[in-house]
Image (cartoon, rainbow, N blue to C red; front, side, top):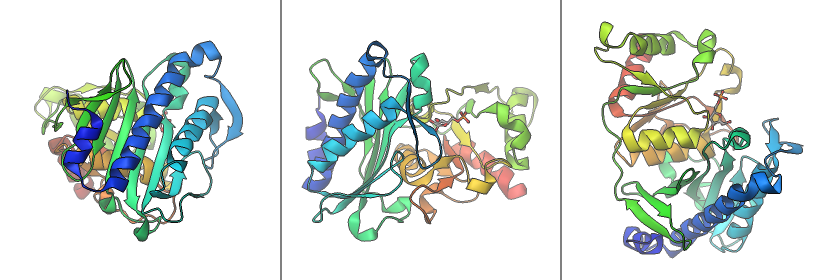
Length: 315
Ligand code: P6P
């Protein structure tokens, strides 16, 4: 089976980029080992601190961030690290050509109940500075800590999936992932309906009406509450993920973060033939104003993203 290093060599001649991807994969393997033992080690609780978003940090958020930082410090290619768990960007190598933006443990509120969580990362060129659009990404990836430990990566070509084997190697298990163009599955937190805008209400109502309404087919709903879990399901079998702007999140610009959640996930889904949108523009075209900026996130099967964009165009 193709190993990660062989796949990377075939995808790019940029040794710095290859090195950072391997470092992030190694950090993911180390985090996976920590998570497997966390309930025994009593590490699923709170760290007793808050992140820049004012959210209580889990002990494992801080541990995962330290693991990523340790692996990247060892790589002279990384100039700056932006992390959900760090208020400010961290300067690493002065000769580094690459910026890494990461959510080291997304969905950590699910750890207590043993639900899939993940590490998300985006790699950008240093010379573009911290506030580049997602189109500038050189690569992106996530590690999904689930029944299997999956690494999903894309440089500039197709998105592919690796699985961590019992020797600690990442082996290729999905070559050139493809998000089905059509789908009958949507993912949104329906408890927020009272905050939704007209476009979101219209899209979800049309989906719930299914074959009895304008959509003309049956839909099902899934919402894990862990972005990596929901996005991985969509990457593998189609669907649409929605965390749209609503009347409660509008003051913050949305719920999810642009640099280390929306951009890398959009890069990966689009590398598999899916689409991404804020509802009004492509996520990858949003010009950041802050390293912890939030945006509305809609991504997945092309037909479904187009359908909600049509609702936004009408409203
Ligand atoms: P809600 C987890 O906290 C997270 O950042 C994403 O992983 C997930 O998709 C979302 O928030 C869940 O948000 O409002 O449903 O709890």
